Length: 221
Ligand code: C5P
Image (tube, rainbow, N blue to C red; front, side):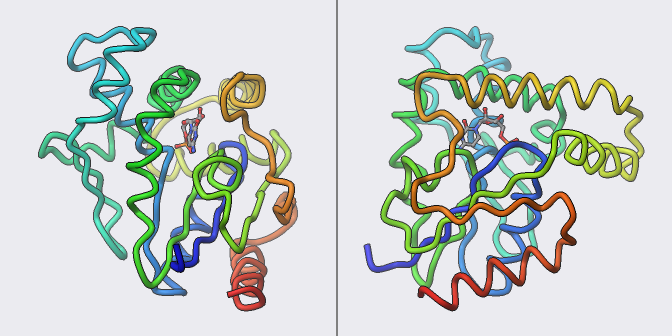
């Protein structure tokens, strides 16, 4: 429990993934992309024809699913021995993830698997409930936000850069629906931990946000 953890929570599209990955690199720490676990679970369930509201089957799958992540610069994700990062990064995979993520038994089943990522010399944990539920003792907790419009715009630029054709209005509607589901659910809803440092990134660059996060870590660890 002496291994330091930085939790980075917030709504989708606030830049958690980018910032967490860069912070982990800068610190030389491990990185947990907890959203990828929910995305993988939803994908694997569909491949097995398990319905996304079948609580028992989903919880069992969450416990035994073969999941591996690349380390360092390698952001590949492996499930059942197959590289699946392209499948789990779609908007649809995100929506499906937020359905399975609302099921208490699924969250319970993934709890220990997430804690197992906490290995020396440290961990940067990215998600919705890292500071509130999974790593409540973390010495540094950050809550990243940005306006829904700004988040839709960032997502839009990312997708267009990848050659994926999307409408910004659809992205905004999607972001609002996912925010609603993530903040209103009964179990582990999206909210800042009481001791979290909230940072609105709407008008900040990636490197500005990264510097603030690294400074917080140096202050407290
Ligand atoms: O962060 P990402 O967009 O990959 O997460 C996908 C979905 O997984 C979120 O919308 C949320 O419903 C769920 N999630 C969660 N708890 C986490 C991480 C993700 O409920 N710690």
